[in-house]
Length: 303
Image (tube, rainbow, N blue to C red; front, side, top):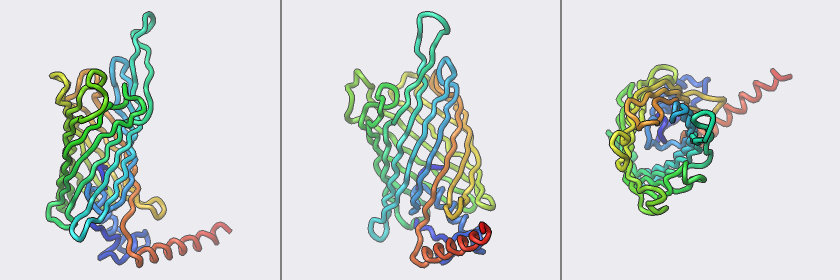
């Protein structure tokens, strides 16, 4: 899913380091994959998500949204975690500009920072059904409020619930936000919007998995026929290592069965996630020794 980031060992009982040379590497990959698919796991992650929304407007332009969305878990007492997820969007928004003569439209676009979206989830460290609840905020940080942001400070409740019966991960994230401050309503309309992201992952061997995680949205203040965006689709992903760095890579296609007039009917989502499992001091020492061993093996080859 590629959404965000329970204490996850890097090896069986947390005693081994997940390298290709350890016999438990496949088991470690499975544990890491489960944590990566859990939005409220105690796993630091840095997702970089590229979204291409095709065929916007009369000129069939492509909107691009790059989301940088680090997830940081914080321990709050013995039984609870606080999960901080902070989405920073960088947006290219195509704009059709009417002109007096020539082609019907001349196309250009606005590029810059969008509205940041931090979310905070309180979640139990141990629970049969994994869940988290807390506030989500939208901050008016857009560099071009006219085209790239809401011009409002908005907030609302957010909840995530999931289960992970092998080999599945099944759950949903939902929130609704309302604007409470910002630009005058004559400049930017009030905000009242809903988001539901349901996700299903089927995990396979060697870190591979099939995934679907469409984002259903509703703008409650939009006119009839423009309220809902309902996508269907999915893709494939894999947990793997780049050197010693665990990463999660996914590619997904979605078609919007319902969307506002002129909005994108389909899109592509690519995601690259850096994963930072929690390591004990013994694991850190073992990982360092493994790195030194690899460096010593590489030096004779270069000579």
